[in-house]
Length: 148
Image 1 (tube, rainbow, N blue to C red):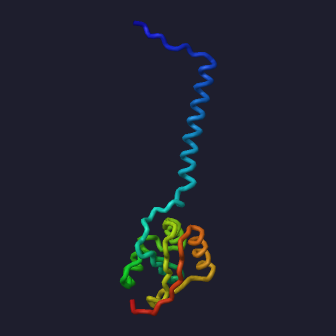
Image 2 (spheres, helix red, strand yellow; image 1 turned 90 degrees about the vertical axis):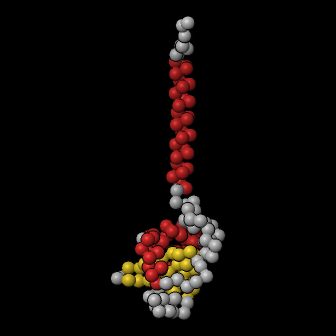
Image 3 (cartoon, helix red, strand yellow; image 1 turned 30 degrees about the horizontal axis):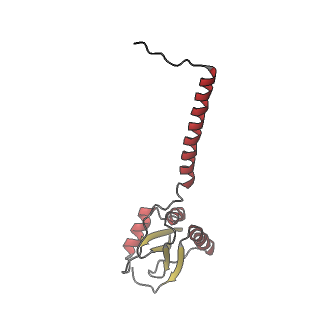
């Protein structure tokens, strides 16, 4: 039995080219949508008791640690270990805050440890604005100091 393939004509080639171009356009749009939303969608599970943010200056640089909230007081080692694991810089904490789901609570704690304090007002305002834009509630907390 002889198989007869359809005859390729100019119009069938044009339709095939248009179909391929349309398919490629849809694929590119899907990729572009993923790139646009990358880093905007929450990538962190909601924390039952919110989050605790700590900041301190050491060696002329500011460091930040973000930890899940709990019913107990954190140790200085826990705070510094979190900052080390997360990168600890302002750029890293900004990335961390953008990954929190809308509706989360962040308690920026200063004074719980003698070393913790708040950076310049401009940095506080920048992080507060970032949280507001993402729908994350940022609370400034000044605690009673404890020994580390």
